[in-house]
Amino acid sequence: MIVKRVSFADYQQMLKQAQARLPESVKIVLLADRGFVHTELMTMVTTQLGWHYRIRIKRNTWIRIRKLVSAEKLSSQLWGSNLFT
Image (tube, rainbow, N blue to C red; front, side):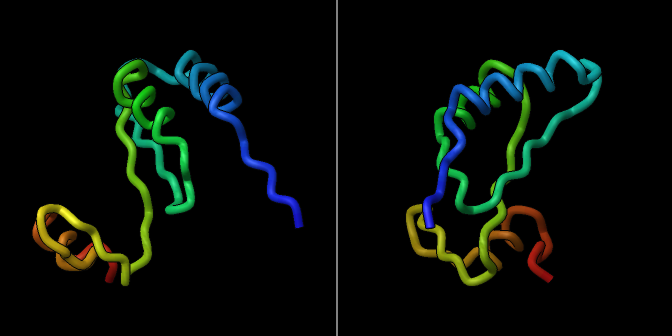
């Protein structure tokens, strides 16, 4: 099975079109799945478009921020509740 990835240029064009159509007064949050691999696109989203992004991850994912922390524990520490329940 051949998997074709969407290029950065394709995403960039699509998001610029979306920006042109959306009201300036709304806060945009781009939601991506954990397999999303375009870090340069996320940089563009925040620096050029002024949007925010969230990446969904599995409940049992571990994140290293100076020390190893489970995604569930990090969720509780950052937002005061477990976003995985």
